[in-house]
Length: 245
Image (cartoon, rainbow, N blue to C red; front, side, top):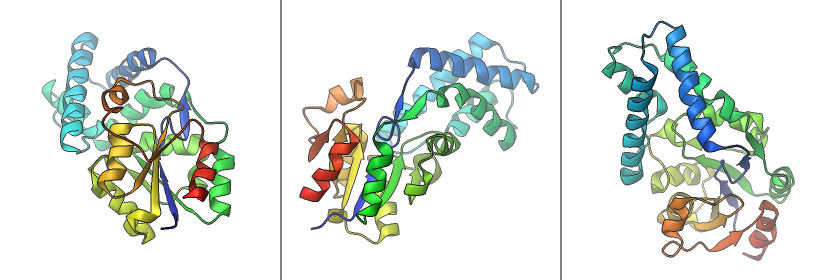
């Protein structure tokens, strides 16, 4: 059956990270706590940082197991309640998280062939969408706009907005229903075997593994058990592949 739609992941698929994750994670905590302190929260840096990271990791692990997305707002509100702040406005949470993500967002850049690839897909009549696993939807929206990718992507589905995350097949069904296409007519392109490729298979799609930035322990755990229909080392390799299918 002819391929009519292409779903992309965002991070390490359309955009690449050019920085040190360790430095960014440390800076995120510092910027978040600085914001909270400036807005009247009396927090011990070390104690709050340690507990916040424990909560984030706890709910991330749970989300990996049950394919539910526990948002950054949820985990921050949860931690602040433990520290005696059960009533925090949505605005403070969102602005605090924006401060935390700001430095990291500057280090994501589009892959060099992304615009040519998206232009050509659009010219050839393919539907183009995006599914991103992310705890913070606003962070993803800013990354999309920073990379100037929005004109090509419709729909944009973010796990923090819909409550489930890849590889849950429901998140793929949202795009299929929007496009009114069958699973056999759609391809998923992403860098994570356990999310993008397994999710595609769970939903009946073909999975294309993008390996431009795949040096992750999570992929090593799945490399012998999850097999993509194809593997690409650059986005430009996708076009002839789709034409062949």
